[in-house]
Length: 102
Image (cartoon, rainbow, N blue to C red; front, side, top):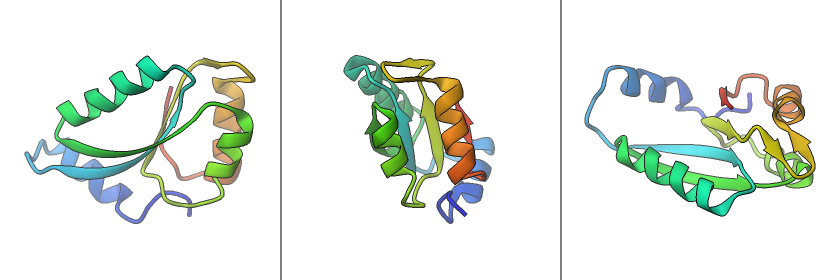
């Protein structure tokens, strides 16, 4: 299992629109600093407390996936050394149960 233990509970709280701040461990596959900041701010706006681990290369993604601590992966469509298809393939290979959003 690669997703954190409370990933299922997180989905329930978000779906039911509780106004409780929920900590969410985010794997952010993004090379743009401004985009990463905007995504992080958007998560905060939606009553979440994001713990963001940003990676911007295949090497960094592979290292991040070695630790099963994420609730969700948010992935840019194009990075300098890979595209979303490659990134999603790596995520599925190592953490098949981790929800991903491109």
